[in-house]
Each structure stands twice: as C-alpha cells, then as structure tokens.
Length: 86
Image (cartoon, rainbow, N blue to C red):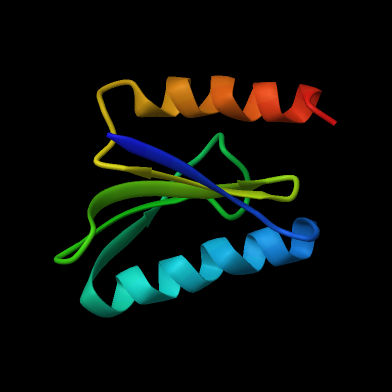
C-alpha cells in the first residue's frame, strides 16, 4: 500500500484534485462511491494504478493505492489526525 497526500491551496482545490483523479480512473477502469469519508470519496481500479481509495479532507487530497484490508478505518483515523492538525 502507498498513502500519499497532495496539499492544496484550499478546500476547493483539494476537492478538484480528487475529482480529476476520479475522471482519469473512470476513463480506464471503474469507480465506486465510498461512504463515510466525505462527499468526494471514491474507490476505483484502473489498469495503470491498480486499486485506490481517494478523498479530500480540508486542503488535503488523500490517495491510498493498493489499499490493505480495513482501509476505510485506517483512512478515517488519518482524516481525524489531519482535522486536528491546523
């Protein structure tokens, strides 16, 4: 698994980054909505990246590539930590 963060200039930009990735994955794979991680959250799989979960939290765009089991719980803790870090 690989977790990476893209630090945007604001919330709107972070959401746009997640949406851009979602649009890319839709072109070459499949996308599903993920509940519990915010409005922008999705899981997807394409032939280039493989499986991923992505969502925006504040000004962060968060991407988990090749997620492990219980990835949603891990990402919720990650999001909580970012929410405290202001």
